[in-house]
View (cartoon, one colour):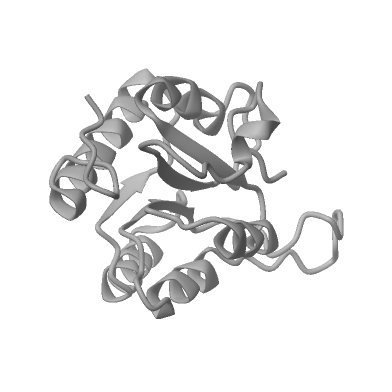
Length: 172
């Protein structure tokens, strides 16, 4: 489902005025109370509008409809959830990274890796970094992991936007 704050689907609409940072959140997990539900509630009071995508297709729709300033890409993202449990569940996280990398002005990207073997983990990290990922993090499971992701997003904002929202307005 593509949406903004989970309790306010209207927040997925682009904001015409005011300091806003559009954050693409792609998520491929199936856990109760996932990090992707908690993160927007923490960031919204600071002017961050979270645009959620549960599939590669939904992420593409978000990218076409609003300017994305930072993207969080889950490598386990399915290609399309509308097809239901298809015989071939193709993952599209790597495709989404390539799409973002080819944009005229690619947004900074934080990659959420899957739990894989050390060899696959190394390969995925190397590919993500080649495609310009700012950071690669483990999929958050608890409050400590979520704090790590928040710190990475803060560092990303400082590096790419000098601590200011796009358009030059300070978030604080």
